[in-house]
Image 1: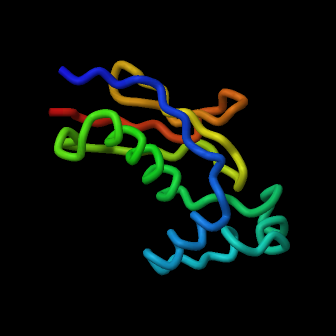
Image 2 (image 1 turned 90 degrees about the vertical axis):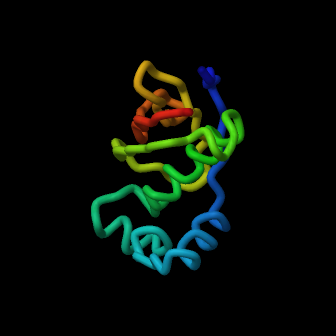
Length: 113
């Protein structure tokens, strides 16, 4: 059985957000327009949720190997803001993606080979 260790991610950079948006054609202004994000009730632009998950999966695959990840379910819990550093913390059922203040940004349930 593969043991997963804690991993650090970030800080999440705006260039990552732009590249991700271009790759998946997601140019929702909440991710790029600070005025729009604030008018939507947020404190500023937020990182795309799927990008947060992709960064966490990259950290997991870096430890376990590409062919080890057999199944994945992700749940977004809190927004991530540009410049934030994240940690992937193993749990009994997978991992949590935590912000520096301890807030859980996402939970990941997965199966490793």
